[in-house]
Length: 278
Length: 269
Image 1 (cartoon, rainbow over the protein chains, first blue to last red):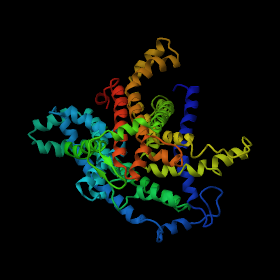
Image 2: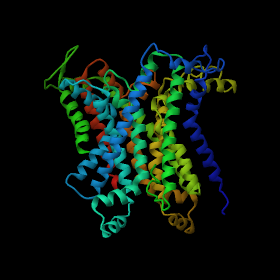
Image 3: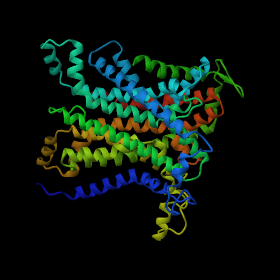
Image 4: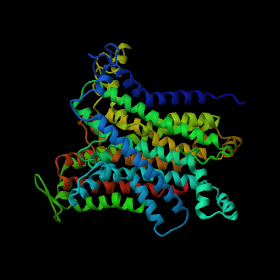
């Protein structure tokens, strides 16, 4: 084994700093959310208590946190399912050339890079002019898809670019129908990556803010609710909420990785389809 | 797929373009075809300042995220030796991406505030006597938040490119007598170009289209184009918001168009 060079240690230190930079602030509010009842928004801590968490579960002067959490969660699930289904279909379609494939591809890229407030504004305007009420499950849902779908599609591209076609050919040679080939050969191989797509679909939707801003209507999703709180709540209750949603996000991520691990363990011939593009 | 994108991407953009020519009264908007919104936009010096600000944020954030992102990706790809560790450390970097942006912004406040951690630490070390005022609600905090939120978009594509570099090329460079620095400069960086480009596209467009980070981290004291739009929206001035949006869209598309000439995204996945 070659000796570690000096650059390794320098870069390790840099990396450690980067991780600290990423996680430091979150840890800070995690600590601050245990602030005592008299405590303020910054250090020093004024005692340690669960006061603000209790406060969170009680009736709030402004907003409807739990209602918005339920809405965010539901919307996240719907967006997740739609994203997975549509991006798999899209990914399959793009393996063959078809009319408008290039246009559609650039459209997807455009959808990813266009400033999100434009989507929000445009969708809001259309609903406004058509006289339709904006609602998180219709207009909000659509606007979020413009963000999650391209991600899903790009992941599917990455997967199918690395996909070995001979598996399918083998299945076909054995007399499997097109559907059987898909269900018993293609799907199990890409399953881990589908979990990745699902994770993206859910978390991106759950945290989405700008696209939902003008399209959610009178019932807020959680990020909108939190944003509303930042302008008129000045107690650590907001840190408590932040800690809880972050923990919830971690929980979801953990859940997906557990599922991924279980899947890859079940298969002896584990494919590397899901690796390298998490 | 095509239908959804048509309904919620192309549709809204067309709508914005149409509405940008409409007129507005105090309470309502009416269909028209006039260039008032654009005339007003181009006639006002605020517009130029704000667009300049937007480019400034984008440029500084780009430079910082590129430097940090490249270094982190390099560490992960070349200095970490086993795949297991690479995946584990890579995940550590990616996880924050899946948590809420707003929470991640809020969490800087106890850090940077007047009595925040940064100030109290610096004072107790004796580096400064007075709390620094420019830490929070300034250009500094805005850019800090951008870098915090978006460095990942640099790390991932660059890491992806680096992992595809054939290790024998690097050995060849070393055998040929290249120093570590020369290898980096003449072998690794050129081969990472696609990753750098993709990261650049993400970061610049995200920063240029952002309004919430700027509003939040500057305490409404700084402006970029996104904020101009969102201010108009809150005043129900949809036509002028749309006109600004059209200009922003055009700017972003030009930037991307330039970048895309340099790389073919689809091949790089």
